[in-house]
Figure (cartoon, rainbow, N blue to C red):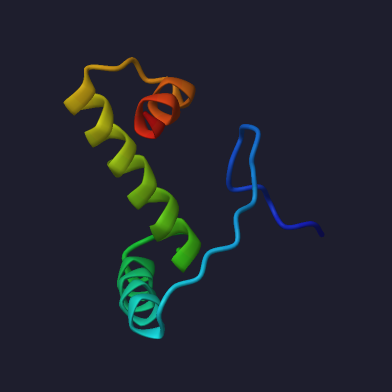
Length: 77
């Protein structure tokens, strides 16, 4: 049986280099969240959620709409 998709929209892969300390902190947090969740929580899930929070903060600061394209173009400028 195939693994169910976690994201229901188009995706893009990105290879990330982080320190062992950063990974360990995220791993501990994911394991803590896993204890109270009915589904698996991975480090990747924590990273994706963090990115969403960061994008929301950018949108609030810049007064942008919710499209990722406008956030990306504003961040580059």
